[in-house]
Length: 205
Image (tube, rainbow, N blue to C red; front, side):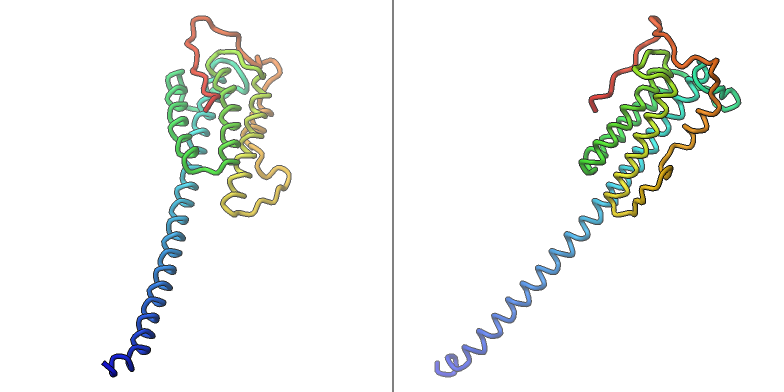
């Protein structure tokens, strides 16, 4: 019994040492797990932003060509392929699907900027589909360019990339090009077609 009492301080020291080691190891592993989890979410967030940008740019491309086919904006007859309203509807559907990932993984400012971008694009969709919009074609192009630039500025700042804010950095070069090609003799918008199906309003996304 006396031997046990004599060894008790040493046993307590060993026990405290083991508990301390376990605590440090558990804390280190927890921090490592959190870092790995944060990295995975950051990667998924960036991927969501990229997929959304690709989807909305596809929608814009179809809008520009479809509008040109209807005599709005620049004459782009030399560009293939030709599109239909069904192509525009399919592109809009893909955009709405990719938008859900932005809502799930994106930061608040990026979500606001992304929503403003597709609200601007919706004007292009209306005009391209032969419907009325609150802006003329050239004005809608400019609004889309500004919204696109703001989205990229917000996203790059969010993921820690350098944002210089230099003039023209995020300007939509295609928008500038289309503006130069546009003829003043071309209509800036089309009247509402009673026979053409309406697009679903997605401004509440």
